[in-house]
Length: 77
Length: 483
Figure 1 (cartoon, rainbow over the protein chains, first blue to last red):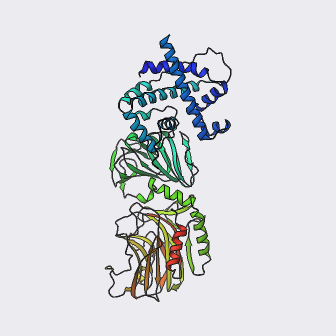
Figure 2 (spheres, rainbow over the protein chains, first blue to last red):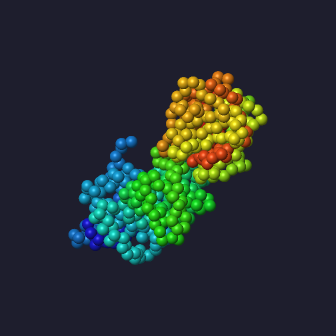
Figure 3 (tube, rainbow over the protein chains, first blue to last red):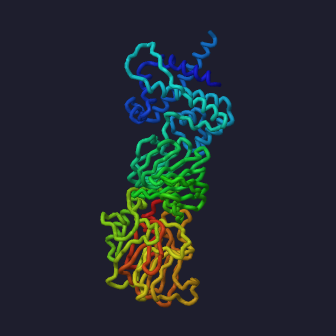
């Protein structure tokens, strides 16, 4: 694990995020805004704060798996 | 509470800024011992930061599919590698909250709330926070504060007590008069509404940096300082001024158990007692005359006078119209152990006039409680060598928590009975026992000599009859802020 590898992961993130459906992507981006109120965002999305954090972590997991696959695909091709 | 959160949970909590102190320890341990965990941790932080960078320029509108984000140069990544090597990964959270609320005793900031840089105006109660670096801070109302970062807390006014582990070494509390930089210890900072600031070191070392002067001063265990231009002025430690972590649980539990309502009912009943001389709860809009600070009492949003400097006092003039053959004195107090000859709870004026029965209620140097009436004498065979009725047990806990003190005087029975937290302590027998005289008096000081008080008094009761053991016990039980 080194810096070039992490940089390639960041590049792959672009492709992975664009694979998400629009509402999910928007919600994810909202949560990562600098002044985000997780409380407000969670309520608007119909979740409890705890439920929202669970969703957020699932999304991150999925994105990381997607990124790793992307990088594998690149090295194989 | 020995449940060990799994890796996913620890990771999730850290990314969301929800890490508790024990999570911190478990996470540290896992990262130290598991290379795969370290690798995944780095990948997740990387992802997290990339998402934050992406979100910064993101617009929730349809855009051309081939847009290209320009990633900001994440120079922190290089720093992170240096940090990974030295086992201190937990610093690097670009968008995370600075602190999370761990627990609350009657404050508007409830458990789980995350704080960033906004100003918090705490009107009532007490809150315990943990910073992103693991520092635990207990802040008591009334207070105004904001975090500049996980390592810098601006305390505009109010009091904060911090417990700083090695991961948060350098944690700084910024006050209007200067900074307190902690080197890995426990300390407290008290800022008055006028901006005067004190630093109290309970354990370890704190560097005091008065504003505007180049001079830094090192403070150690048991030392306290008033921050002022130039070198600060050393002062006595006031541990009772600070609520700390270990007190939070019992304060919260007391509130949850409805102790505040029980207390109010007990006070309401006392107000109708025909023998009532005075019941001070210090809640009235009209403050009593004297020199003292008004700070929080036992209940969130309540008030209690705090006596800090020599000369601080409150004047009280009640019950001077008659003499009292039976008298109960009781108070909730939160005092420091001073080592001075006496701490003055309630002293009537006019010692020189030598009027028999003048009441003097105080705490002695050895922290026993004394109720002395002028010209009274002890019965033969009394153990008290000073010649005055003293309690047997010490009544001030070392850490300065709220305690209930009571003394019941019965001139016809020739006794003084002492109570500590509602429990009967001992009875002292008298040979000569004059009826008690009250009238013009002071709390916290005494005209004749510089006897002072260091701490708070809440709910002072003067009752013109002798309360029974059961009544004193009930009084303590009803008014107890702890559970």
